[in-house]
Length: 394
Ligand code: FAD
Ligand code: COA
Image (cartoon, rainbow, N blue to C red; front, side, top):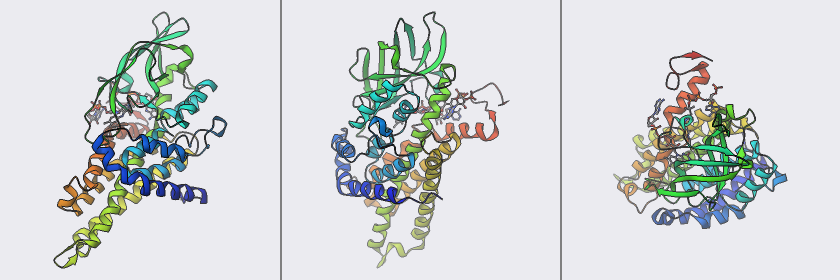
């Protein structure tokens, strides 16, 4: 149903070439150094893979999410972090600004991203993870400014991203709450500091940090107000966030596909009992189950991204794609490592890195449990009791 066009095949080919020839050989060292892959960012920028979805009038290519996921998968096969950079350079914060922002905000965001900046999207707080709508970061109106106070944590790119989209509760001058809005803040502006970096299990070359706002003064025109206003601001911002969820599922798929490709090659070379190990049915069935998971993940991702066109993916399709791709990818990567035996467990091989890298995708960007809740709420057309007092029909 979502067969690739000629142009998409060309995009895929050039992404694959960059990923296999340039990105893959660097992946191990970036993981060891735990330093942001600025060299990869430069290559992505030169190839036009940052800001692909930005409309042409703002300097981008006006491409779709489906075009983007094709690139994300290729990058993630070689390096999960680089896949994530492409996601955030085209989805999430940047697409929120491009859809909801005013002219100045769009121009500003486009300039950063087209220059290689991966925006940071700042939602999660120490006491508001899954319960994101209970965030306490606040923005108080004071004349023509907003004063921001609060702490975000687990922010991908903290310290390396320049452009930030910060979700906050908005209060008017009388102290009355108006709803939830998104604020643009730039690294280096007064009042914005980068806090502790998490010692993460995987995807170690991209920092996950606290972002602290202390009496941060922002001009009022840094507020992005979703179309239905601040009172519906959370729903509007999360609607935009569905694009990032599809992107995250794609990184998981890419890592798993990369692990599968390595295992497929290895089991045809490695001999035990005087035969290539691929001749054992135990591994053959495992291999086929892995391939089914990859194909099914890709179909869900292409469906969610393809149906979105240049708008945001559907809430249920995005959840389905992310849940299935993330859970499958963890299984497939683990099975690929298993096929390598002890060699898979060695830090000399990429399998153990892929296994660590893929683990986050049932957590970050909405846990697999929360995404099921979100999808169930839509399918059943009911508010579910996790987030409300008892079942209520929509
Ligand atoms: P909690 O909400 O405390 O959940 C703990 C457990 O309880 C989970 O298993 C969860 O599924 C379960 N649970 C909670 N509520 C329910 C419920 N109602 N029903 C069933 N189960 C439930 N955040 C950002 O804002 N920006 C980022 O860039 C970002 N990047 C991240 C990168 C990584 C690598 C990771 C790991 C996280 C990132 N996050 C980011 C944060 C991420 O979105 C949160 O970790 C996630 O939303 C879950 O919140 P929590 O960790 O506080 O878990
Ligand atoms: N797309 C579109 N709309 C969404 C949405 C999404 N992904 N998630 C929530 N909404 C809408 C809801 O449909 C609801 O609209 P309604 O008032 O018309 O019914 C509104 O936003 C508020 O959602 P609700 O479910 O009532 O909020 P809640 O506080 O009860 O639940 C969660 C919160 C679970 C939906 C939400 O906070 C969540 O997705 N948590 C995970 C956070 C996350 O992904 N963080 C990633 C950081 S990188």
